[in-house]
Length: 632
Image (cartoon, rainbow, N blue to C red; front, side):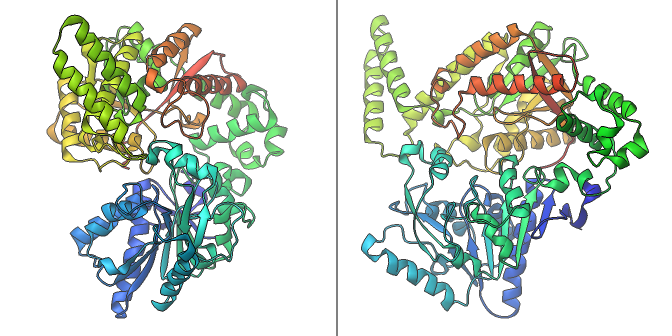
């Protein structure tokens, strides 16, 4: 965090200058959630004091889920009263019944409304079952009801990767009222995992219009995670344009933006603060500035000269810490020191790689696992979830058929296997699009992921007895949306850590994902470490790795593990063992590349960054960061 250029706003929050509307950045997603929930609580209490009802606009999606969890906590532990609150929800998918788990109605009731004391009659969600002939009148009645209760006091908004607000996709009219909309292909791709495939995502929704939302007296826009950073920059620093609908709120007059550090990462004052004014030149800032300068000048570090600094607004750095060759050598040595000859300095260490899904180990740090085993360390892998929702139905059907034939060949419980195959076929045939699987199907899909994980780990050099399939309870919902981490999850991890007693553990470090399994798994591990400390048990060193989509910036890397062409080839073979995720994955995201391609491209890109800085040239690098003990 670049605190030297920011002004402290409140606990863990910093006001970000040089933006077109008020922006506050928080250290962690948890801090952001608590700040927004606290503001909502203030609105509710202020309305109570004036003996009127607070009117809120709430949004669906993954971003505000932490806010809703915090509001539930405040209700249960602090007595926050919702009995005089009226809520309008910004969106509902057209044609989805209220009972469908993917409906906004079902989601918000399960995660918020059913857990607080808000009367059912005070929750208003667009009617997904309205006849098309009556749609215009229904939408008009929705807007009229907002006016009848005195208008919206506070609106909580998230936005999509294309800048949409609710169902107001790019190029929506700024004065629009509640209406039927067509979902953008980008939006539908992002929703694919919620509906078990993009083909199951509705094409239309009923949305509050931008004009309706803009009439709210106060607006809070939230963003969490680096995947939102580009749109955050457009919102806070770019021009007002309906190409990026969220940017229209620059003209609202009372909109505040709440960010975590990752989503704020591309704001100019965060990314390149030296352009805007003086900064405190600590070691991290010096590395950042020189890496940036090297990129701007297309020069390796050791070829930078004084004029390069002066021509790129780095006079202060040069004046107080120069000359240029001294700075360049300093940064060169700091970055080079992250490159390891041996992955771990001590010999014969015990390590655990915690893999949120059954393939994250080999995709994210497969080369490092190979090297750890080559160097004589005892490498364990803990698969935290079954990954059973990310398997195609055809694969489950094929395995059920295969096992039946296998048993028939060897005379093993043939009648029972025939019955299971019949039941699985019926369950899959009767499953409606977008609905969760039956228990039998989930078990088979979990078995597929289990066998693939074991095969991949063995290719990486791990022993079968060092593989631990934790099947954490929080994941066992059978749907994309998971439960919060609980004591049972933490207890399982504590038991593993106390039995294996690792010296080092590797943890998926995608900590800014507000709803993803990686972040939830990390939360459970960090809670387990606190338990170890309380018990006086051995506490391992923690190294964080990234998933298939993003890499640490140079200044964030504490350990760089070079991979030879042979390591890369073995890593690819290990990833290929995950056949259910190869060629076409059920939840591929918006990136068209296969997982092995993403992994290889990322590792090669990291190596190229090092080479462009004039550092030793490697075919590929895997990067890690030491955990600083920061809570989520």
